[in-house]
Length: 269
Image (cartoon, rainbow, N blue to C red):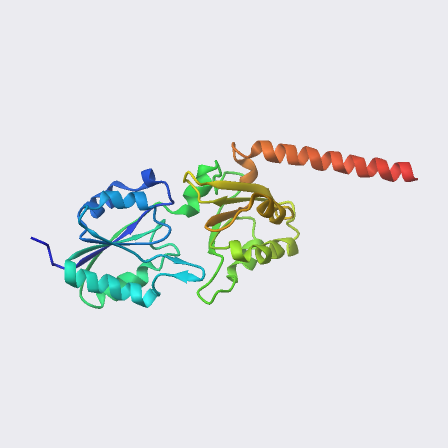
């Protein structure tokens, strides 16, 4: 018999690789009567839910929303009251740029039991997949995690503050604002600061572009990078064991270009 005691479990689906799902998340899915899942939650993960569980896609992309946030909130509550145990599956960690707290607060206003299962956030996992440690002794003592696009579709004002610091800066949902982001770092004379952009991180569709603040826009165009992607700005990018070769070659090329320009100047004299 179907358990109709309403309960909502907010589950973090991790950064994309289904093997990065937590054991607690797997157990929660196995007990679900209904699963409401986002665009950033890998659909392979739905296989952990019972075959007869109702599965509803409620993903949001720029210009393409299956449901508004208010509609999602109501769907969570309606399904819990009708079917019992609802798992709300959200990409990454539901409390990091995921509006998870809003959904929990709405459910609790109806007296529904709620549980939160944290997920591995793409903020740290996606850079790590490319060997980027977002903090490193002697290189970076801290990091900023910023949403590139606010709820009113503007660039977060925190980006300008982050550009002034020596910390690593990790920006989510920022690809549509990348030229503005780059402009802010250039205004702080950080044109040589290493940058990595990782699209579909930790998945089979992962694409990576690396460069500097001054060169990254050209690299994004060349590699046809787009959303969803993580933008990482900071000296720790240069320290990655996977990316070191690029920056060593980049520095050598810069030195050769400098010598070439100096020789040209001497020749003209």
